[in-house]
Image 1 (cartoon, rainbow, N blue to C red):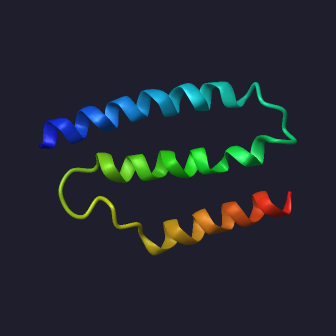
Image 2: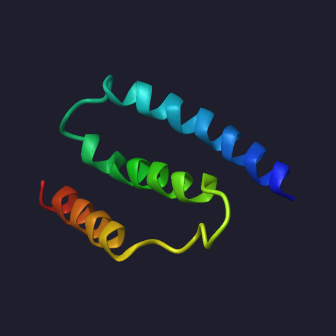
Image 3: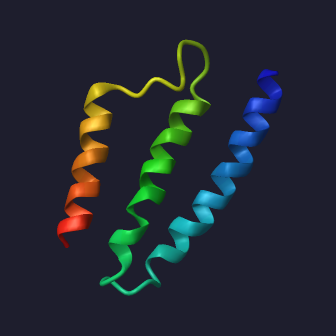
Length: 75
């Protein structure tokens, strides 16, 4: 089960890296629409952690994520 989780995380990491690489080619006016991609990157790091409770987001991370969404909405 651990090997499957890590394989899926690696697959997702490849796709997120491709999106992040192409993010610089997107016009700055619509770039805030892709902020959830960066949040997904943080969520993927949580999944890649071994042991513990990988799906539980810390309070500071949740506040930071909501703050990012708010900034994108205001832009």
